Image 1 (cartoon, rainbow, N blue to C red):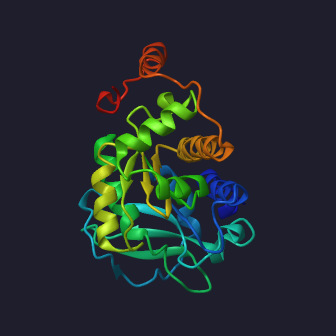
Image 2 (cartoon, rainbow, N blue to C red):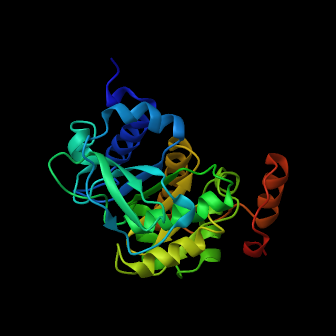
Length: 275
């Protein structure tokens, strides 16, 4: 009989956690991941659900379009490095109630705990992305990406500046995130302010910089979300290396070059960010 960790959705979730940890993005219990499950995946996992689900816990937010949906989530205070070693202790599957304002754990966190402290932020963003993509987007991923964090100390905290720097630092960037990246100024993590600010920006962007904190990404699947995070962080790292060289920048990708890329790769760049 197949085990829970052999189910593809759970395997993909665990792999992303491991990949992110190995990239150095998840010190201690840093970062979090959630996945909105398909009905077929819920059906596969249901035989492993607890016979006595946990109590309903209020979220403090309402996401009515996520009514009765199921999510795989990392646990609050859990370490990404332990997800593959002991998934039943480190992650969980949560069911939302009919109103979309409370959850209960149906599998996982066997030694106690609750889903990530950013769970309300994740759900608000899932709600926005589900509506904006006709249900296609299913992954919300937050990581403590060091180069992006470093950039947030030296660049103005606005989307246009960050997007232009990232687009011009690596050729693939305008193709992978043509809408650019959003920017949220520093806020207390896990609180309602950062949740609302992020969900508002998610109406436009798939990647958001959390100043002095990390990156927040959305995607339709694990590979796309991880690939977006990786691309944004790599471009930021390239820019930081350029600055640290102390050398004068002699050439770069021009705005006309960006437009040529967009045309050849059939993407629509955010013209508000071009001169």
